[in-house]
Length: 349
Image (cartoon, rainbow, N blue to C red; front, side, top):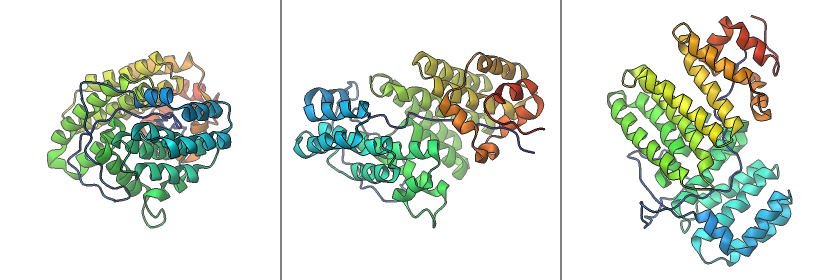
C-alpha cells in the first residue's frame, strides 16, 4: 500500500558559480570518456581566489549579461555573454562568462540546449578544472531535481544505458576534474559496495575530501550555498558507514542536524526542509529506536510551511518507492500523515 514519500536533496539549480582553482584526483578510473583529462593547475591551496567575483568586476559585458538575466531577458543576455566569451583573453574570466551563457538555457526553459552547452564548457581544456567540473555538476543536479532523462544524453545513450550507469559515469568525470564533495560522496557510496574489503578505507578517504571541500566552498561568497547540500551528502554517507559497522549512530545524527542548522543559517529554507526529509528517512529505518527523534523532527516541520519546490516533489508519484524510512514512519505515525496531507494527497493506510 502506497504512503507519501519525499525526494531528498534539491540543490540550487542555476547558480553561476565558479570555484577557485585546485585539483585533487581520486584514485578511481573514469567509466566514460566524454570529457578530456584535466591539465594540472598551479595555485596556492592555502589561498582563495573568488574567480566569479573577479570576472564580474573586470568584464563589463559579463556584468550586463548578468543584469539582463536578473530581469528575465535571457536571449538578450546571451548576446552580451557571447561577446564576453569571444573577446575575453583571461581564461578564468572567459570560463565564467561561458558557464553563465550555458546556464541561461535552463532559466530560459531549454534544458537540452543547456546540457549541450555545459558539456561544451566542460570539454574546453583552457578553462580551469573547477569550472569544467561545475558545468557537469550543474547538469547532474538539474537532472536530480527534474528527473528529465533527456539531460543525461550528453553522458551517453539513454536507451542503451540505465540511469545509474550514466550518473556514475558523470560523477567520475566530475571528480577527475575537481573533487567536489557531492560527487565524492556519491561515488564513495557505490565503491563501498563494489570493493567491500576496502569499504572503510574508501569511506575515510572520502570523508577527508568532503570535509576539505566544505571548508573550501564556505570561503566563497558565490559558492557557499553548496555547503548544506554537501553536508547532507556527507550525512548520508555516514549513515551507510554506520550500517557497515564503522561509524557511530550519534555522529550520524549530529551530521544530519548540522546540515539542517547550516541550511537555516544560510537562509536556505528549501535545502533545510530537504535535509529534514533525509534525516527522517534515516530515522525511519529504525522507527522504534528513533521514536523520540522522529517526533522532534515532525514538530519542527509542523512549525513551518513547506516551500513550493518541496511540495512539487512531494507530489511526484514515482518517489513513493525511493524512501523506505519515510514509508515506515508514515505507516505508524498519524501526526506525520496529518501534516503532509495539507500539501499532497495522502493514500489511506
